[in-house]
Length: 339
Image 1 (tube, rainbow, N blue to C red):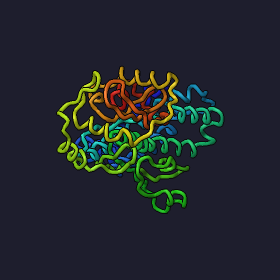
Image 2: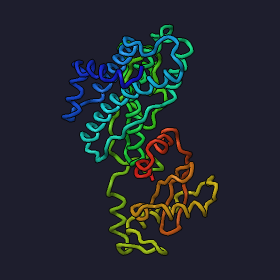
Image 3: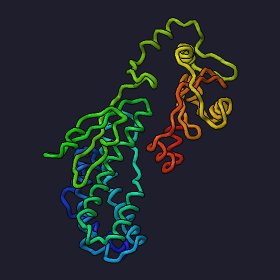
């Protein structure tokens, strides 16, 4: 049995459910919240688990490849429904906070489906039905968690200060109760985790204030920059070697230059090669900026910039798992977002 033969039947069940109808209406009119998206994800997971069982989609003796095929299509579908709802909720958060950013859609972890397929093919679905059903719900819920995580990552690297809120289920266990609360990004990994039959939820909380990319202190726009602009005798643009920069950006670079030590570089081509890579791959906006955040090789670099080939690398960080996911899954979009 293949998913294409089952999808139409699942859609009938989906389209007759009052919560699913309500969520679609809220998506269309832009009023869907994360709370409702979480409720919806749980419902979709429960419906998918029941549907696969009722239609004997994972029969006794099913092979790993067959189980993987049906789970990839069916759980991929439930994940997409839930992530679409979560992205609509994220858009509402962004709009309400007047953040001019689109919601970023997550990608599911294929290894979770692979592991479930292996478990079903080796033990038999009937013998582990309760565990499988719970994993299907958990997997669908993870679409909301992943949306929270990936948008927090995106906004934090866009100069904002997002937060992640974990809400404990009523009468939850001590472990979940201790995790409940609101966290600054990056939140501990446990915030996104669930044990069996856990229905705790995560939500995204917007933060509009920009942060200094090194000290993490809040920047109040206009104060220091305005003072420097008023007092400086430098003209509106400064030519430094072959690079023109806006006056205030050059002033900023000069004022920061002696405050930070250059870190040890692990880029395999060495410092000069890294500088060359930066020169050749900066966007126009980056060339006009005193500070640069750029991915080169397997690292993300923070650098001060005073013009052509004039850099001071003040931070080198290996790409984290979420960033690697962006790079692998989004390709061109990833480069547009994080360069």
